[in-house]
Length: 107
Picture 1 (cartoon, rainbow, N blue to C red):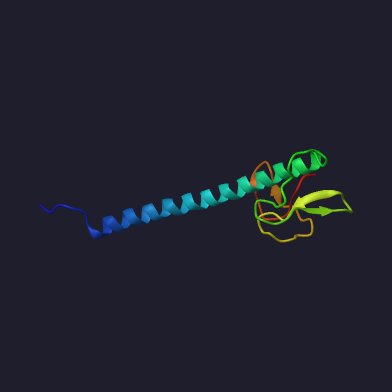
Picture 2: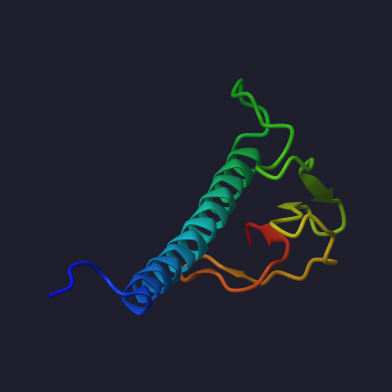
C-alpha cells in the first residue's frame, strides 16, 4: 500500500489556499481604505467644528494630499482614495463603506 499524497491532491490544497489568501488580501485592502476614509471624515469634522481652537489641525489627508476648501460653498473636502479632484463628485456612503472612489466631504 502506498503512503502519501498524489500530485492532484497537493495541487487542490494549494489552489484552495491561494483562493482563501486572495479573498483575505482583498478584504484587508478594503478595510484599510475604509479606515482612511473614516480618519479623513474625522479630521474634516475637526476642521469644520473647531477652526479657531488650539487643536492641531492636520495639514494633509490620509493619502498625503492637502485638505481643500471651496470658498463658494464653504465646504472643506479631501480628494479621497483616488487622489484626484472629482469636481465635488461624492461617491462615498458612510453607512456602507466605500461604494466608489471620489471626493470626501462633510455635508
